[in-house]
Image 1 (cartoon, rainbow, N blue to C red):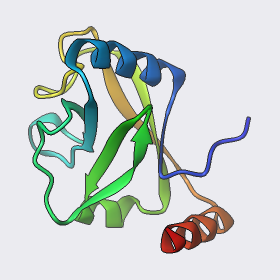
Image 2 (cartoon, one colour; image 1 turned 180 degrees about the horizontal axis):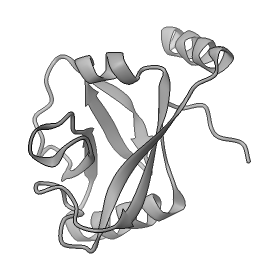
Image 3 (tube, one colour; image 1 turned 135 degrees about the horizontal axis):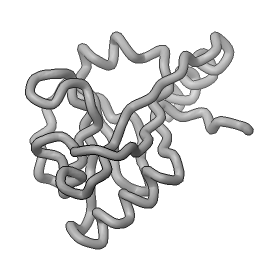
Image 4 (cartoon, rainbow, N blue to C red; image 1 turned 90 degrees about the vertical axis):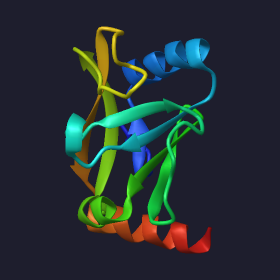
Length: 126
């Protein structure tokens, strides 16, 4: 199986839940929580319902929903690909998946040196 070269990707189960939430709430956005109340979990919001700061980093889209992370956390995770998945359980307190019986979960894998170089090169050209 080939894994797309992107900073963040979604499993089929995550794409299905994103579709369900989009039908109910409209356009969505994600923010990778860095702790606090909900630990380190991907939080799903209606588009525009989470205030981004100037230091938040855009990582890509999950089925059309933009995905962000704070700069300090990104500096720690920049060498990994985030793989957003779904498991049974309760979502984050403020996340739209809360109450659905399923929740988003971040898995990760390290980029190879070659992948990271190619990704950084592509980002510089963009």
